[in-house]
Image (cartoon, rainbow, N blue to C red; front, side):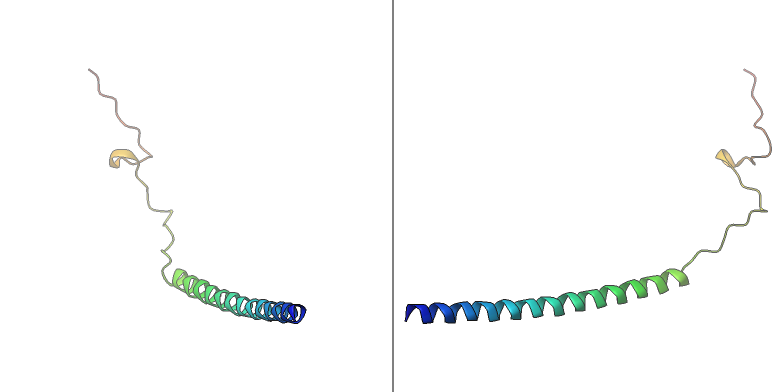
Length: 77
C-alpha cells in the first residue's frame, strides 16, 4: 500500500511539474510578444519625434554669445 501511494504521489508530482513547465512556456512566450510589441511601438514613436538636423551653414556661438570666428578683445587694466 505504501509503495502504491508513493508511486501515485510521484506521478502526481511529475504531472504537476509538466503542467508548470507548460504554463511557464506560455507565460514567457506572452511576455516576449508584449516586449516585441512595446519595442515596435517605441521605435515608431522615435521615428515620428526625431529632431530636424542642425544647420551647419549658420554660425554657432560659444560662451557669452560671442561668435567663434572673432577673438574676444582683451581689456587692459
